[in-house]
Image 1 (cartoon, rainbow, N blue to C red):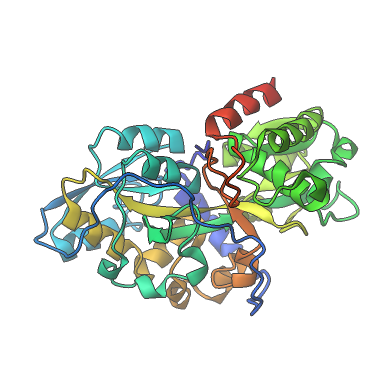
Image 2: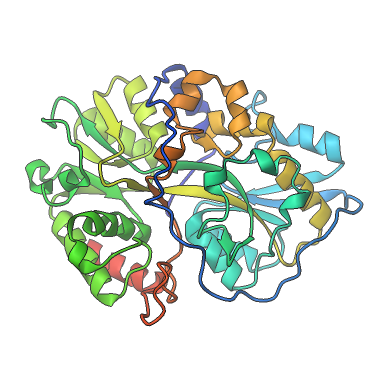
Length: 404
């Protein structure tokens, strides 16, 4: 589940942000894997995997985040669906969704062939038998996908990929440079030190934000035994909830609309809190005195995955779409329009160096500091077998309690 509302207007604004891109940290050869959790530890339903391509069916029903499957309707200059249709003969029927919960529910209807799922939805789709394992040998440029995005807890189970990585990003810490001094280096600025900015702290409005608190506790209270911020037993969840309840006293507002966060930082109603790189770029382009960092503890983030329905009526066109949308050219177009790092590093040859540096596209060291959204399930994702972990339903109930 995510409350990430990616409106169709985002692309037009990103065009402005792209002009204001500034180079971020360069790439690094570090082999740090501290944020590399194991793959899902449950046995999914037995769904057959496609073994070979067949004749195109003439159409494909795509369920996507706004900005992921643009056909020129919103902006004639923004169209990577039409080239796909011309190349394959598959008419793309695109439906946008606003939250991961919505996507999960729509996939249950069986009316869609392929979906762009965030990590807080993907395991739910796998466990429910709504998506099939993906034969990556049928994906043309799969070898070009950055290795650090493959075989991860949110897109594979027991070594089997259940999708094709699409785009990713980190949840950063943004602050107003004129109000927050000295410059923060830790998430402690919005947790243990949040009272310094009472009434002006902002946080992401979703149960998955509990993982941000768990990550901070994992690094600062090792006695809790947290090894993965998405694998929390009841005691660990209670500790994260307690921390978030304390933070609640200093919150100005929880955000789900990125435009509202931009406005809050411009006016000074918010001076510190979680953000995305694209939001920072937008705020800076509108003259807000802001900076964003990846704190010392690392961060949560998202990595979206194209997944094929287990009931796909047009499986060949669905595979054709997953193969096409992960080629360098459409990857570069989506990334620049949407504001995220493309999964295919070869897209950097088309986006330009400044974009790739700002979004850390091929920066494995940066990516390895991110704990990507993963659906909490009762089977502990950190490998514990003698313990029952809390699941997303419990996180949702806890989030309601936190907000009051």
